[in-house]
Every structure is written in C-alpha cells, then in structure tokens.
Length: 45
Length: 548
Image (cartoon, rainbow over all chains, first blue to last red; front, side, top):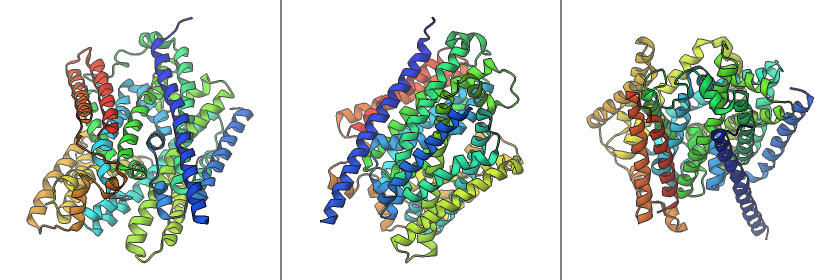
C-alpha cells in the first residue's frame, strides 16, 4: 500500500495540535475553577 | 445522513447547551460577560481566536476558490495568521494595557465621544449583517451535505442553542465552548483529509490530475498571483488590528504578555489547519470537475466520500466551526452596544446590573437580526456583495486613524480623524462602484486618501493634548498592572534572547517577502522560499512572545 508522507505529515501536525489543545486548556480551566471556588469560599466566610 | 448521524448532531447540541449554560453562575459583572473577567490564559485564548476565525465559510468559500483557481487562496488564511503575530506582538498589548473593551472605546480616549458612537454603530450593523450572510452560507452547505433540505430547520440548528448559551454565560460560555468546538472541528477536518486524498490517489495522484499550477503556492500570473499575496497581507494586518471579533477575545487575556502569546499561538495553529480544508477542495476538482457552483465542492465531497456515523462526527466538526464564530460575534455586538452606546449615550447613570441586562437583551436581538438577514440574503442578491464591499472599504480608514495615527502621532486630532475617515471611505466607494476598480486597488486609494487628509486637517485645526492621550502614550511602554503583578511585557525587547528572537522574526519576514517577489518572475523556488520564510517568522514570533 502506498504511504503518502506529505498528507500524513500534515495530518500528524494537526493531530498533535488537537492533543495539545485538549490537554492544556483542560488544565487551565481546572485551575480557573479551583481559583473561583476558593474565592467563593473566602466570600462565604 | 441517516438517523444515527442526526442523533450524533443532537447529542452535540445538547452537550453544547449544557456546558454553555453552566457558566451562567460565573457572570457576576459586565466585565465577566464581555471579557470572561479578563482571566483567559494563552492556550485558551489561542483556541478561542482560532475557533472564531475559522467558520463554515472556510470549508465552503475558501475551499471553493481552491477548487476553481488552485491552492494560492490559502494565503488569505496564512497571511491573516502572520498578521495576528504582528498585532499580537506590537499593537494589541497597548490596547490591553488601557483595559478597554472595544475599539470605539479607544477612539473616545484618543479622539472624541462622537467618533466612538459613530464607529460603534457601523460595527453593530456590519457584524449583525455579516453573521446573517455567514449563516446563509452555512445553511446552504449543510443542506448539500445532509440531504435535509429545510432551510428553517438548519437555521434553527445553527442559531437557537448558540444564542441561548451566549445570553446566559457571555464570554465565559463563549470561551469554554470555543475550546471544545476548536478540537471538534480540527477532529472533523482530520477525518476528511485522508479520505479525500486517498480518493484521488494521494499527493502524486493530485499532482498528475490537477491543471498545471494548481499546486504552486506563489504564482506569476492568475487571479491569486504574487501581488494578491502582498495585498492580502496588508489587508490582514489591518484586520488583525481593528476587528472587534478578534480584539475583544484578546482584551479578555489575563495579562499583556498573555495577549502576545495567545495571538501568536492562534496564528501558528491555524496555519496547518488551513491545508485541511483547501486540499479537499483541490481533491474535489479531480473527482467532480464540472460543478456549476464551486462553493458546493467540499460539501458534495463530504456527502459522497464519508461513511455514515463518521459523517455525523464531521458534521459536528463543521457545526462547531460555525457556532464558535456566531457566539463570539454575538458577544462582540452586545459588548459594543452595551458599552459604547447604552452606557455612553443612552443611560450614563446605568448600574452594572442594568448594563448586564441590556447586554443580554442585545445578544438576543442580534441573534434574531442574524436569522432575519439570513432569510434576506437570497432576496437581496447582488446587493449583499455591494454591502459587504462597502463595509470592507470602511475598514482601512479606521485602521489608519486608530492604529497608524492613533498610536504614532499625537498631533492628529478628532477633526482630522473624522474628515480622513469619511473622505477615505467615499474615495474607496467611488473607485469601487463608479470606476469599477479592483478591490485591492481601492484599498490603497482609501488608505492613501485617509493618510493624506487626516494630517492636513489636523494641522489646520487646534491641537489637542489631554490626560487621555498621555495615558495612551504611556501604555505604549508599560502599565501599572504589569508593574504590580511583576509581569512586564516589553514591546521592544531588552534581553539578548528577546532581541535574538525579534531578529529571527524579522529575518523570516524578509525571506517570506523575497519568496513572494521571486514569484513575479515565475521562479520555480519562490513557493519554497516564501513558505520557509513564513515558518521562520512564526518560530521567531513564538520565542519573542515568551522572552523579554
């Protein structure tokens, strides 16, 4: 079977971007959520 | 599409409604609604910007031009990405320091309240109408892909959920759903690419079967030749500095440095992405060479090539690209109206609660306006193009008065800015419609008129100097916020690594321009040099955003 380096290189770059943009924003949103929760609990005290 | 595909789309819409509406509790103030409380981090900001910039028009319109003319149209996206790096490193950090929400707000600080209100109204009209045109394009594409031909059904699918969650959660909802939608539309495009390429015999098959020059990135002749690349690059810089949809996301960044990082990252990730919709456009040229309407090329390709179930996932990706653009611009219109018109003109004693309520009502009204315009598009016919051309013409004078003179020369006053803006726009409209000039030529005439008229009128009228202008000039260097947080971003670098990265960035820009100019003589290596320059430019820009 023919392997097309050009197409799969483009595909791999896109795939890596997709994985990074799943992992990093998830971590950043979790941090924002924790920050918000701690602010809320400070206000409630 | 079969039942399971519709179920996938339905589950996606329910999911978006759920995650979008949970942010209702996060909106306590108008700043939360407009700017997500200015807490967006670089990677979130990059995904939000990319999701707002890529919409179904990319998969339909730009890929349609690639189908008809060749790959060169990809420079529209690539130079736009390069422009985002320029504005992110040098221009938007200044606006972020001023803690403004909209470009009209900057115009009041720099010139006068009248200029602010005038430009705000123009932007409200243009964004609402533009959303309607994009919605119409999306509905036509969705009809082709799915076989579900009801116009109203697709209008509802595209608009109801997104309007509701944008009203409830404002920018917080927009940011969170945009990140999810960015991943989904990238995923959909990653499914499409290998299927399209294998159908035409991969890259060698594409080279053998396409017309000569269809895969040449920098061409000597043709509609999208080397001159087009230069013109669209200049237009891209103007867009990246004044587009409210883009700027408002950047104003939501957590710091000045995050603006630079977010915009550079957004430019970089959208660059390979552009290949994922343009290459299928070229594949469609081989598979369906005689389509009457080029815009239907990729939708027909998707409908024929993609198996069911997977088709549902690809449609979710395409829907995502559209919803993220709608939500961002709905929020943009609401912000301009609530901040620049309501708070500034109609009710100056408004409380924050009043403003928040108005922003939500305006989001709803803009959504309804978008839907009405989508129904009007086929009725208006050629008038739509005329309208879109006029608003595009009016962008250039805005760029000249807000960025070139607004940030570089204090002596320019509101009299000069208003006269330059109006005469620039009129000269462009006359050139375009009376003398039938090419749009690129019109742009240069418009810019030239504003560049000449503005300083002449300013020098003939009274000089204005006040604290507001001094504040803008201070923001070119630093802000108190950065000093307090000990996170200073220097637009012109002070460390060796910062200077080195700026040098790499400029070297990349020069190589890119050399490559484009080599296209004027039909050089066979022009494309390789231009793309190499672009890659070096992005690498330099990325390091510049992360160094001091």
